[in-house]
Length: 219
Image (tube, rainbow, N blue to C red):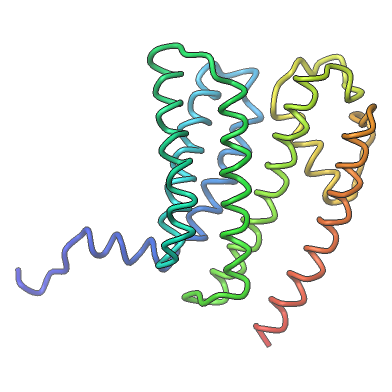
């Protein structure tokens, strides 16, 4: 019995070693879940709690950076409190939740990008953190587009079946960042036009820098 390692320590070590791979898998699951928002009644609630787990995981992934941990931890606590009030007491706080989500997504993105130059357990974890940050960037921009349309209806030219859901704007963000641009959703006002152009530039630059850095390290 004395040779057995305690499970909590093993679990902690496993998370520290594979934290970005775990967070990447959770983020992909949340993006996929977004696509069922209009079909599955519990998808929205599950997405909120999934985001909570993602944000808590990011706080754990900040390592020994106390400043970054506090900067992420305070809004995470506020986020969870709002989720509890929203889910169990029916408090309507969509605007505040969206604002907090934007702050936390941005902070999580910066944390993941930091791993491109900071120490990691393996180069594959560095790769996972880069892909995580790239997808997070798409999600953050999607939330911004979604709130712009909610605040100013008509800011985007939308297909008839889009009725204010978040998922179509995350999709629009992804095809904008990858410069695919299918054309079924387009910006109709000056602000979203500027933002989509900026996102296309940032997304292209990130891919070039990220691939160059990863390839250089793996050689």
